[in-house]
Image (cartoon, rainbow, N blue to C red):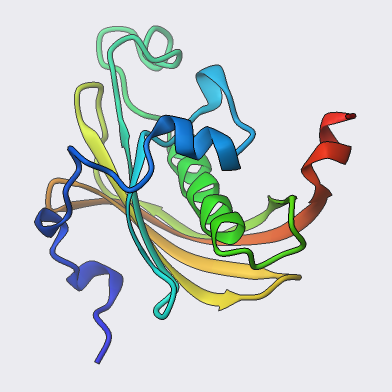
Length: 169
């Protein structure tokens, strides 16, 4: 029996020694600077289409100063972006689409935000592929701070084309 996303023991993963750190993520995902929403990937299980990643939130992150002064909250839309970037990483890492293609965000469904996420916290993202295909990919993603669920959403992605073409190379 496969565990549901919520049933995983998140303490079992080694966040100090991720499978992929920022440089490995950059080798796959094109996001840079303020829009890098992943710090690391700690687990990939291709048989279950399962991926676990994280984002360490800092008080120097671009959104802290204005969202909201004196009580900064990690915006829900950025939690969803982190989820989408993790799904894109999985898609490319597992060579699901055409080599070099980028998984673009096509939709978010059933998004729910149930806990505030603040600077200084680690948002752990757990995604399980519901449909993983070269033309359409759907992942159920849940985000946690410690053992508390912060959000959940259903991410739909579609390939955008060759990354080199998109970059104008």
